[in-house]
Every structure is written in C-alpha cells, then in structure tokens.
Image (cartoon, rainbow over all chains, first blue to last red; front, side, top):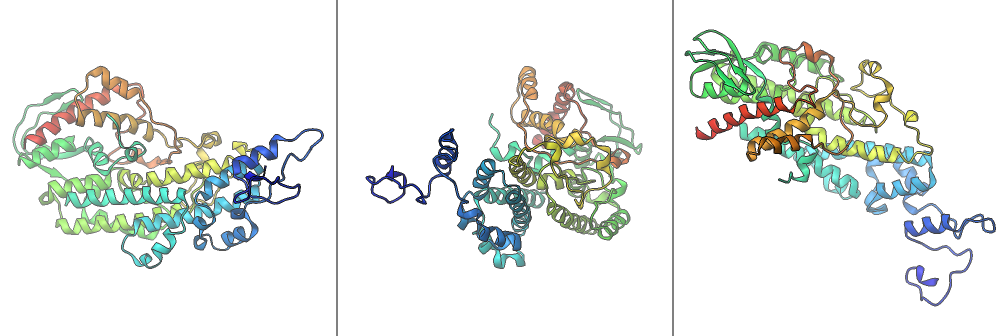
Length: 155
Length: 303
C-alpha cells in the first residue's frame, strides 16, 4: 500500500503507526470503513490537518484579517466544512465562523472601495483570500461596479 | 433565454429602476388628454392644471414632450432631505424611515428628467441625495459586520441599497449556514440567533422563531414577487412571448439562497407604498403591468 504515500516507492507497505498524509476523502473512508468488533479504531486514526492546527486557530482568533488563509488551504472553508462534518468540533466551528464573519466584512470593504486609503494594503489582503472569499469579493465588487455604471449613465 | 449567472440571484440597477417606474407620481398636466385604458391600469383623463397621479414612466414621458410638470414628492424637497440627512447622521445604527422604498431610483429619475420642476437647484438636491446615500452606505457596511447564518435585519433600507449588498450577503449567509449545519446534532432551534445585531430591533420579537429556521426567506414577500417581476420584465423587454410562455416562466421560481429580511413596519405609512405585494397567484396583473411597460418602451424607442 506504499503507493498511497506521496513520493514513495510503490513497493514498501506502510507500517503500523506510521504518519502519512492522505486526501480527505480517503482518510474519511479509511477511518470509518474499517471499524468492526476486532478493530474498534478503524484502519487509521486521523490527526488534525495543518490548516486547523492550534497554531493557525490561535492566529485566527487573535486577528482573522491578517492570516494567510490561502496559504493554509486554497479551499479553506470547504475543507473546514468537510472536516467539521467528520469531527463535529464545535469550538473549531465557532472560531471558523468568527473568522469568516470578520473577513467577509473586510472583503466587502475592499470590494466597495476601489480608490481609498485601504488600497495600500489591498493587494496584500486579497492575496490571502481563499476561493470562497474570492467569490464573495467578486460578487460585491460586481454589484458596486454595476451601481456606479448606472449612476453615471443617469447623469 | 438564459439569464447570466450573475443576474440569477440579483438585479442589475437598471432593472430596479425599471421596476420603480411603476410607482405613482403627481403631475400637473399642461394640456387636456383623454384617459388611456391600459391593461395594467387606466391613466386618468387630464385637464390643464388639475393635479393627477400617474406612474412615473408616464410622467417622465409626458415631461419629455413638455405636456406636464412633475410635482416632486415631499421627501425630495431640500428642506426634507436636510432633515433626513440629520436624522441619518444622528443615529448610526438605524436607517431613518423618512425615505420611500424606491428613493434612490425615483430621485435619479426626477433629477434626470425634470430638474426644472424641483423647488431647489438640482445640484443641491443631488448633493443632498449623495450625502444621504453615503451615510446609509456606511451603516449598511457596519451592519454587515454582524452577519449570521440565518437572518439580517435592515429596516427602511431602499431597493437599490438592498440590491447593492444582496449578492454579497446571500453568498456569505449561505456559507455560514452550511458551516453552521455541521454543528454536532445541529438542531435548527439551537442556532444561535445573535441578539447583538446592530440593525436589529424589537421587530424580531414579533416574528415567530420558526421563521428563521430554514434560513430562508425571512423577508415578507419582496423576494417572491421580485422574482416574478423579474421574469416579467425580461419577457417584456426582450422578447414578445405568448401569454402561455409568460405564464410558464412566471411559474418558474429561483433556487433557494438565504434571503435578506427587510421587515419594515412603517413602510405602509409612507406616501409611496411598495408596489411589491404577495401575489404569487395573480401573475395576470403583473403581465398587465408589462403590457403597459412595453407600450412605454416602444414609446421611448420611438423618441
């Protein structure tokens, strides 16, 4: 089964107790699928993925806007959804919801202010958005642009 | 006829403005004209200097042909706008109730078509309107900091202002809702409806708690009827469908995204009550309105 592990030769098997990285979907299946009377823990025990490690979460609760979410995961919130659906960790959920709210408000500010003082740190912040936030940004910017177009047309 | 994805969940400003053109406005005709029977309603007969109420699109059309003077609504006077501005600036957590639902659109329409009928110089009015808009925008922005997964209360917000934030808010709320759904043993009753919403007020006490539960339409009826209205406006302005085609498109509804609450108790007291009513079952009337608007479009095109 060694081919499951990235960059390893396919011949060797994974030893019991080894730590490997798996795609979420596979980890989910392996963690749940093998549970039986003889093997109460399943094939694998899943440890917390890096984007939801304490280090990142502490940074998020300290200052959500200045964390590079994209660096953690391109699909941070979608990943979070799946992970939370698996683990049901309410404390984590609260942190992530608060993060989302705080960042969404900032995203909105950036989308509506194309030429303000916020511009200085703008590209820096926008580079840290995950895919969900990018969609949000585009939607808000589009609305703002449409309205400006309409107003200038009327004059 | 495909609607661009962007426009499925929201309106473009021109559509909002188009819908607002059906609200009534007082005019002073300069010449006599017989009443016009339109499917959507009757334009009353006109006698010179006798004030009557007509839809804005009629008023704009007649004004363009110098057949009438428009009487600007009370809220659009310099004095009232100043009062409104002060009220807006004084209370940064609430929108003032002095303005009608379509104030942005109506303001623009009148400024654009009848600047000479205003009681004050147009640029004064325009500046005041812009100031008010900026104050209100700042409030909307502050309100967005209190997003939650089930509802957002924006009392007395205008159609155009709502439209500006609609796509953003629905997407953000949808995301929050999905994440909230992963809460262990997620019972919707346990959802934390935060009482600290800035735009929140005592109104929500009147709503049954269940109405938040599916994080769907907590608004009264705006979204329903606007979807229908959208279908109609597309039909009317873009191709001439048969009555049947219209009916079938009317019955089509748009998919569920979380909606925005615009609970507004005081609106009914405003001089220009919203023309959006809960009329799922009488698509007929809406079609009729369209007939009228088609006439209008043709008239505009031929100018």
